[in-house]
Structures are given as structure tokens and as C-alpha cells.
Amino acid sequence: MKARLDHIGIVVASLEATRAFLQDFGFELIRSGGVPHLQLGAEFLGSQNQNVQIELIEFGDPLIREMRLGGARGRMDHIALEFDDVEEARAVLAERGVQTQGDTLMIVGSMRCYFTRPETSLGVVYQLLDYRGEADNSC
Picture (tube, rainbow, N blue to C red):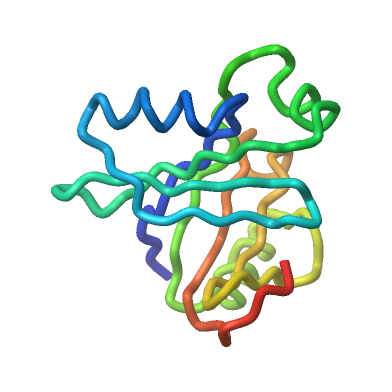
């Protein structure tokens, strides 16, 4: 079971300010979207010579934003690893004691994913994902 680094997720106080900062270093907006019922906006930035992207996440709800950022302007949230089969990866990691934040597979477009519980994955939240899903927006 091999993984590919897909992206690094960062919770930010301002999508616009963080995007502008990263664009100064040559990063370009690849795609944007979000999860409206969670008041969550997201943008993916990348550069032409790299396959890894940076996901910027902004929470519209000030209470959630404060909980996630604690007054900071940005904070690393997760590291996303792509697998051929996310269900297989989850099963292998479960045998090693790694737990996910929920039992329900999240689906956004063609992406299927789980997030690990940091206390079971060496203090880091990993997003385990694959791109085998149907075009759906159930997350």
C-alpha cells in the first residue's frame, strides 16, 4: 500500500490574504469551492513544476474559526495522502491502531476520504483519500 502526497490543508483567517501571499511566490489558484452548509470555503493553489497543492480552508462562522485558529492567522490542519483504494488503506491502518474521525466515508465530487484521529496517528491529522467516487457532493 503506497501513498502519494496530494495536498497540505491549512486553516486560514482570510482566503484572499493568504492566496495573495502565496501568489507572490508563484502559486496559482487551481480550483475553489467549499461546503456551504458548513460555512466552509476552500481554495487549492499549486505551481506548474509541482504536483502537490496547498488547500486553504476558511470557516465563515467566527466561533468555529476562533476554535480552529485560536487567534492565529493560519494553522496547518492536515496532510492529505492519496491511495489507490481508501477503504483498503483505512483497513490496513486500523490493524495498526489508527482510527478515523468517523465511520462514514466522505464523498466530494470524485474524492472519497476519511480523516484520522491525531491521537492515533502520531499527533497529525491525515486525510486518507482516493478519486474513485461517483460525481456526488454529499460532504
